[in-house]
Image (cartoon, rainbow, N blue to C red):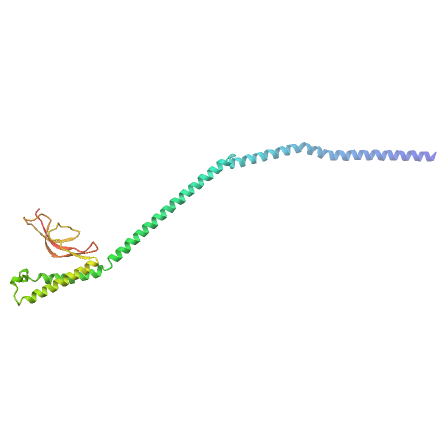
Length: 237
């Protein structure tokens, strides 16, 4: 009898224990199930939000890149940019070549001018000696140089005159080789760039503004007036 009572008590205790365990298990499952269900409920919203964000970013990148510009259009734009750069570089190159050629021409002209007029100062000092030859020759009257009127005493004068004239001729030829040339404007029209008028007088038998007297002959060095000629000019007006 006692044994049956103990067995019944043991079975009741085991049933109670199993029932408690099952309740605890159900409660624990429900506790885990609730966050999981909540996660299942919230997750789709989170994924939808992420998709919206990705789409907005993609649209923004497309707009930044030219709103979906095609590769052909991008290549065309790049080609036009390169063509513009090539045109700019070509223009700079041509300008540089032109500047260099102008510099060469200017340098050559300056070198030629330096060579042509290097003796300018020396030539100015030398023309005074040439003037002295001209003055000495002009002091001999032309009638004393005629052969039929020349006496034995005047022959020495004629020989001296011929010697001075020959020396002057050789000197002028030598100076002419170096570009120094003497000019006499007697009978020419007055040119203020080459002549210096020392006096003016009316003369009915000559045209107006004509040189009728040369007081001092002029000189040119390689075409440039080194010293203007001093002259007298006709003034009929």
